[in-house]
Image (cartoon, rainbow, N blue to C red):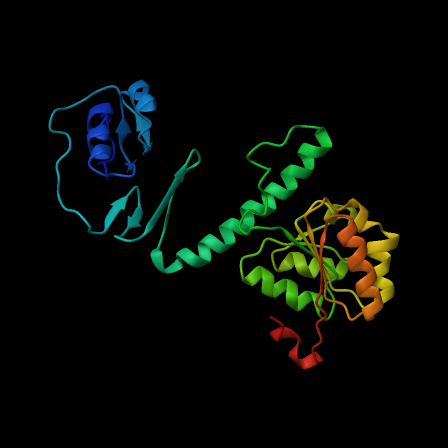
Length: 268
């Protein structure tokens, strides 16, 4: 609803908001005022307003049209656009940009949760709903270890497909490149032990063993998690690591990836 500037009237109250809600309205957004706050809170009808006002004028609201573009507080809202509101305010997403906005909004949300979760753990606080489900855009958290010739294009493809990503590489410039594409960068290999999926994209048997054997990553991962080795390793190495993982209650996949240099960007 668009309210004329300077009108200090509680246009929305407990009665009309509840009747609109009963008629199928999902919520109410107005550039004007709201009254009957206590009753509105009890009724739990979503109402987002610019101000509160005690006064009321009969006939203050008149129906004009439905399913037409409307300007609310300077923002154009068209039929089919997406309106999202919370305690911080209201935003309108044009329907033609909804998928892109959702992708980056989710990425920003998950990255924020990762950072706040680390601080919670450092403070010894119990995890709550605002941090406990970081990386919730998918059924698992994906954390690639290695961001070189193969790891980087794989990481970029995962990000493009909407997977929240925590990346680690011993070379800080590669990790920074991942961050520029939207990944969260792990401070150390220890950070990847608390995850659902670990994807290793490192050069050879020695590098894989350094992480899973010498680094004891297999011993630190909780049971039920998935380890995917995309490196080219000897069959005996894959079998040995698979047996170790199985003994720890982990899932293990030997999934080597090979690609010629000019085809790196097409890894999928």
